[in-house]
Image (cartoon, rainbow, N blue to C red; front, side, top):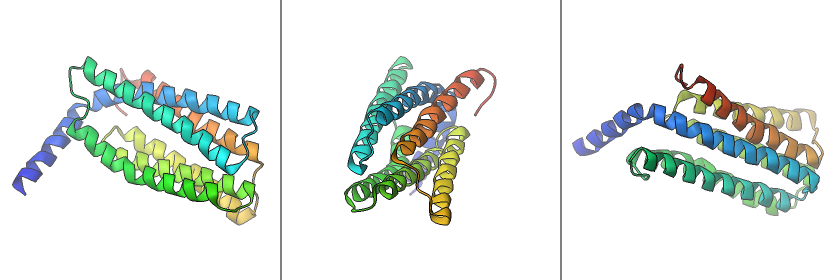
Length: 206
């Protein structure tokens, strides 16, 4: 037990020492993810991907590409700093976000196969993704700069707002609107977060 406590303290100490490094790594990750999200929203709207399975497959593909790019960027930063990639802090962050992301995938699989009215299925997918991603950012925020948790709260807000409109007002937007929502949040939201990190990095912490 004593050894486990010492390991935990070492991980916390390492995370505190690497806050600036994580901040620098997050900026290009958010910018790359935001660019993909914005481009994906425009392309999805132009291609009229309104079927629930097509919509889910399209955005899961974008998420997969963004995840691969994120790993590449973090790996490059670690090698540039002369450090290993799969460190105990990185493992802790991965363990923190995987449950929420796994739940999001499970809900996606169910909703993309359920016999729901198209607009309801698409709206439910968007709400579920924002909740799952918000949970993942909240969990990662305990090991990264505070701004990650704030971004997670923003995704919560979008999910709760959409859910309130759908349940309270009974209004379901047209299929194309869902691509717009994804572009604004996962696209523009990440671009703004990445730009803010870049601008504020030399002067203050997140």
